[in-house]
Image 1 (cartoon, one colour):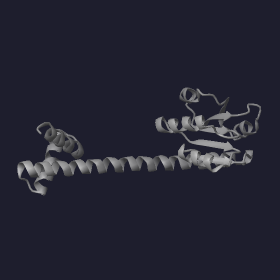
Image 2 (tube, rainbow, N blue to C red):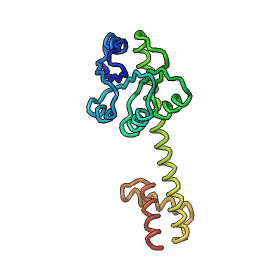
Image 3 (spheres, rainbow, N blue to C red):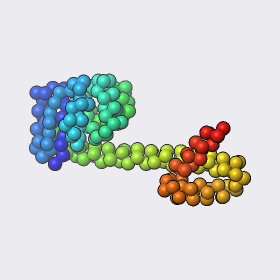
Image 4 (cartoon, helix red, strand yellow):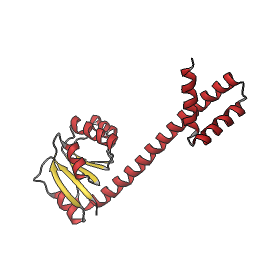
Length: 189
């Protein structure tokens, strides 16, 4: 059973809350406040759902902060169709943005699609971070090889094998060893 935090602009509106309960989601309903990030941290929901007329810049900034610190699938129902709002929603990494489409019988599908999209986005983000780390390691390895070639008169192959052996002997990655060689080189300049 998913734990859903429902943030409504009108607490008297029960359509979405009833739809969530009818599909067996555990639902906590609140009104948006500036302390939303602290509340989300305390409640630890599986999914956030917003039902608003228009998302404020503060809310979108809070969601961007949330996504950077502890990402969650976020679904937003709104009536605002302006291009500026849509662009801000995309930048805040909202998993699903539904405009003028609040129908109770669709909520389960919307949540499932939002969760799937969120997981896909997180996998892409993780892959990008890994690629950036590997690229940075590759740059450091090339710099360290150049240092060994210049200072020790090694061939490129000898420099690489020396780095690899040093890394294995110290039980660290090749990238870490290369960073150490570069740092030592900087120290002796």
